[in-house]
Amino acid sequence: MNNLRRMLALLMALMMILSLGAAAMAEEDTITLTDEDVAALSYLNGQLRVGMECAYAPNNWQESEASDTNVPIENVPGAYAEGYDVQIARIIADQLGLELVVVKMDWDGLIEALNQGQIDAIIAGMADTESRKEAINFTSPYHETVYALMVNAGTPYENATSLADFNGASVLGQKDTALDWTIDQIEGVNHLTAVASVPDMIARLQQGTCDAIVINLENAPGYLASNPNFVVISFPEGEGLDPGFKGACVGLRKSDEALLSLADAVLATIDQEQRDELWDTALNNQPA
Image (cartoon, rainbow, N blue to C red; front, top):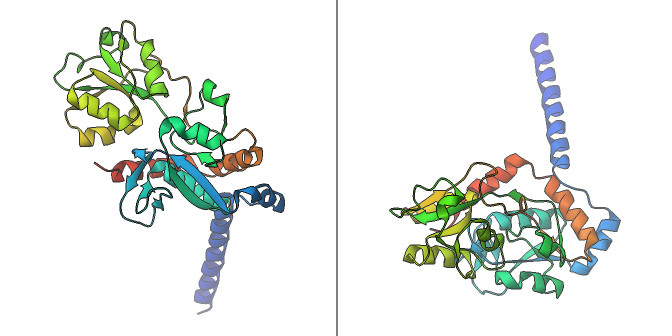
């Protein structure tokens, strides 16, 4: 009996140690706001207003029914935003003690809306290019990217292995993004006039009005699931399109230095395993 009591006592002590360790880990996975931090964010009036397209799956898309993970779109009654960017925005807002408000906007209007105070942040798969850094600030990347080309099966480009194989091809990208301006890295390319969104690009490829479109390679599984006639052409490291950046960052106003520091601190609490899980969930749940 005494041995049993000692074993139970040891077991209870071990459970207490493990619970304390778990609590410590939980504390390490979130930031602690000081009174100074709270005061610095008071101008946000308890909200973090985030702009995104709601049309760039798996980063962000629009749904018609509420769920435990999506967020109402403020300016589209009865619609909800979902996707990887939405989940990153939720984590940032939650850790900063703010209500997340999603505002649907055209891609090319996001930076102007941010600087005019219509939104407080851009979380929309936007990369920190040199030209954009002249207008706004960016956090560290919350998702890294690699570029590829997508073509129709049965075309001369289906078996391409290098950028040189696209000499003379008509290639399409998205306006005001590296999905467009990297096209000029292909020698002899017919650089088509960019369209407004990735869905527009996909529609043009389906219609056969272009030979290839530029995509983020990590988005390819979703595109292929909805379009089995598409083929993705990727390239060895250093031999493909070079966007000049690593991936998506949170965009903030130049004046929002405190918010920038705190957002970066929150992103540092999201380890790669959690980021991968969020990304895989978005890939699996994105609309067809």
